[in-house]
Length: 387
Image (cartoon, rainbow, N blue to C red):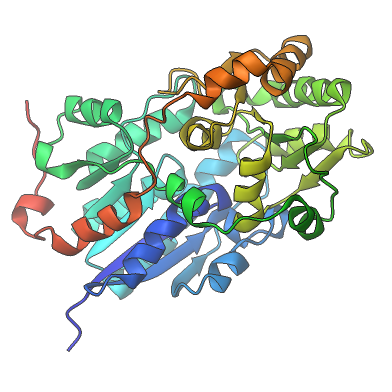
């Protein structure tokens, strides 16, 4: 008789999967747990690298693949995709009837998972609630998911306090740190030569390297092309080897890709629709700075003492370490900030002394232990407010 608790994880995009992959592995390896995944969203799109194949290579059991990504660049496309995703997820959850649903963050997958769990009386474990990011729909989604979820695996103390401030009961809240850090410690190291060979792009030993990831802000879709154009003009002017990973599948992302395509002939620029975990982590280790507005610069880069130039409003208001400098969408200011991050030894020494407020890279086993041990009873399932 199998007495293991079944965890049904949900993943919809490569960036979120990379953060959660170590959690999924810890659950899979735990003697009291078993794992299946719902794979949906951008994972199933060739445009974004068909990253479901990476999940299969990692050896995880896939309960269902739910096609939900609408090939459109308007704000309506994302919420229509959410509706499709929700319908498919209800069917899967009814069939599998897991002990827990598990999801990260603030995208469509988080909202649909939380709704399914709330209505089907399946406890929802939510990772990375309580963060604060101004000016993006993701912030509203994250807080809404917190009110629907039953367990909160937050990434820092400030977020824990914010979740409690939303009226969540203290026994539900665990400050486990950011599981995205775990992979930074566990992924094997590559030499510059090995990394160059795997990418097909030469990175000479000791030469400066910029890692660029820039996404759309949901409240600034109409400016997406111009914002990316400013960043790319700065890249052209800097002339530093740059590795660019394509944006998420959000509304407006096609405008970003159009701007990126106009600079495809730069000999020092390498672009990829998807960068696998081994190469991605080693690029973060190797880079002189990270440019754009990826959450990786806020959450994970401090562990590697990596300088980050955050462009625009996407991460404003979010807890961050001393490694992050904020600049507007202005090529001149971007150039100056990158030059400082790459070549100013005094500034780099300051960054090298920064402390990561998001944990120490041991979140995944903690999350697995909590899922294995916490009582699944009326206390967990019946939510109440603390005020």
